[in-house]
Length: 158
Image 1 (tube, one colour):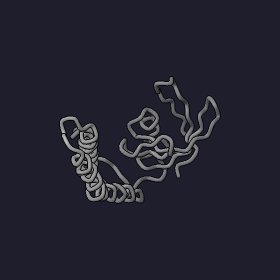
Image 2 (spheres, one colour):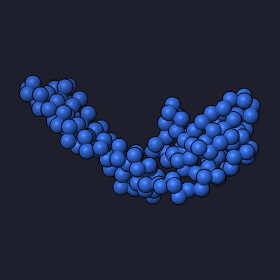
Image 3 (cartoon, one colour):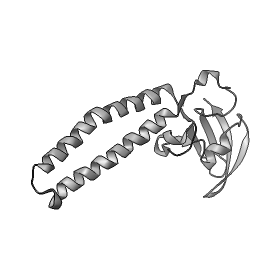
Image 4 (cartoon, helix red, strand yellow):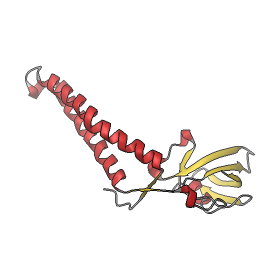
């Protein structure tokens, strides 16, 4: 679909996405089919806004299913036990200190598909994620970001 080769996921996230897809294909499709059937029962389809809305919802829902299937088809499960413990890699939990503000932040580095800034999960393709990859504890790193130059010190790799 989008030309990327692999999507790196944890075993837990893979199972979560598979469960979500299964639920969408069974329960979600049934719910939308019921909405369409109910809207269809209201008469003339050419002037039935409820029917049009239900069909549009169905199209968007099928697109979500398709995107999820694409992610799962490219998924590669990462075994973090085989990753080096002394340097930052995908799925590392990193505690860093912003050297300008002295604020301590903790991030988990994940694939773009799993990124959730509010949950402290940043993509390895983001400027900060890219800048942290391969770093070791005690290392200071300068990262060019849209907000300007960021300076961090790696405090811990958990």
